[in-house]
Structures are given as structure tokens and as C-alpha cells.
Image (cartoon, rainbow, N blue to C red):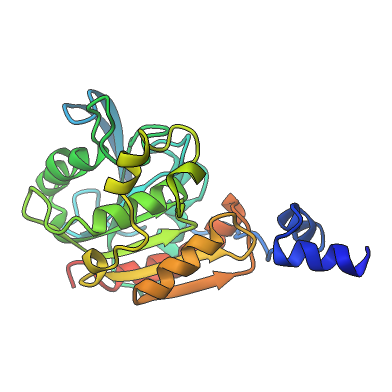
Length: 278
């Protein structure tokens, strides 16, 4: 490969850097789901007024805990095209949770819910409002199950990573609880409305109303961990956000893939597991 071509790939002038880095093994190893017993998973559905549809949910407990244990909780927001089962089916979050608790992180639960395949976790012109669903419907449901929702964490990847940051910046929830920690893996961030994925926002005004970049103040009271792969298309915007806020994590070798998300999940869970409700 010519020197000029290599330079163009590395600086982003030429497309295809992530693919080339993947072939060369420069995007890092994929995370491997640990071979440990999973804990109980309780699932159900409810009719969501906020989302105007019936949504599924799951609560994931670490191995060794009862399915009615009174534990701190971390909300888990899936990526585009996913649903409440994605955390287990795509990332193995049930086993990662058991593994980090077994290695010394205090026990906590994960709560997943259907946020809509492409809502980007914010109120849409249709009236559908995933954020209101979290605060007025999911959190009360979790509290009734005995989970501690006065102080909780929120975690997401890609679309859900953006949603986690958006949620954490909203302050106290309608239920009286408050997100005190947020983890974002490869959050879907754009600098300009015209750069956003089709359907992610209902126009420029919607984009501006739900912007995270350039608005660091709402996140200053939240413990943050933000990770992104170096070859991820969102890496540039994530670097800007990390410059604006005090966040653990960083930019590591990786791309916008489930393998990278699995690799980062243990560190994210350890970070979040030492904060909500402690």
C-alpha cells in the first residue's frame, strides 16, 4: 500500500480505515462472554402510555441473588434495531453481570426495556416519548419489585449510549429518583443535524432540543464513563464530548461493533456497580 494511501486512511481523508484496521487486527479483540452461571432473569410486558404501545422489559440479577432481591439498579438502553432482549442475546450482559459481581463488585441488577427500534430515546413528533416511559412507567415498576430507584445508573450503547447521556442530563425523574451515574459505549453523537442518521430526529429543531454536545452543564452532577472505538464513525464527536465533561473511560482500539461493546462492558459494569444506591 502506498505511503500516501496509508496517510489518507489514517487521517480520514480516504474512507475505509475501520475495514483496513480490522483486517490488520488493529481494532482490538472482540469481547468474549464469560463462562459463568447467569443469575435469574424476570421478564414481562406493560402497556406504555408514553410509547403508545405494549413494551417488553427484563430485570437481570447476578448469580446467587434472588429474583426479588432489594438491589440498586442500572437501566440498560439498547441500540438501534434492538429491544429489551438485546443486552442478553447480543452482549451476554447476564453473564458479564454475574462475573463482575463474583470478582468483587457489590451486587446490583440490570433493567432493560423496549425503547423503540429507531426512536433515539427521545420524544418524537408522533408523541411517542421513551424518556417519559423510563421515568413514569419503568422506574415505578422496578420500585414495586423492590429495586432501589431513588439513585440509579443508566447504561447504553450506540443509540442507547446517546439515550443514556440524554437521560442522565434530565435531572430528577418524575418518580423522585435520580440517575447518579451513566455509562455510554459508542454513543451515537452528531455535531450537526444534517449529519444525523435518517429518522434519528424530526428535523433541525428536534436535533437542537435534544443535543448533548455543547451542553455539558446537565451532566456535571453525574458520574460518567464514556468509551468509543478509535475507528468508530462517532469517535470524533465522542472526543469532543469527553473534552467537555469529566468522564472515565476513553478512546480505545475498536470499531462500532458488538465485539467492541462486549469488550468494554465489564469495565462499564464495574464503574456503574460501585455508584448507584451506595
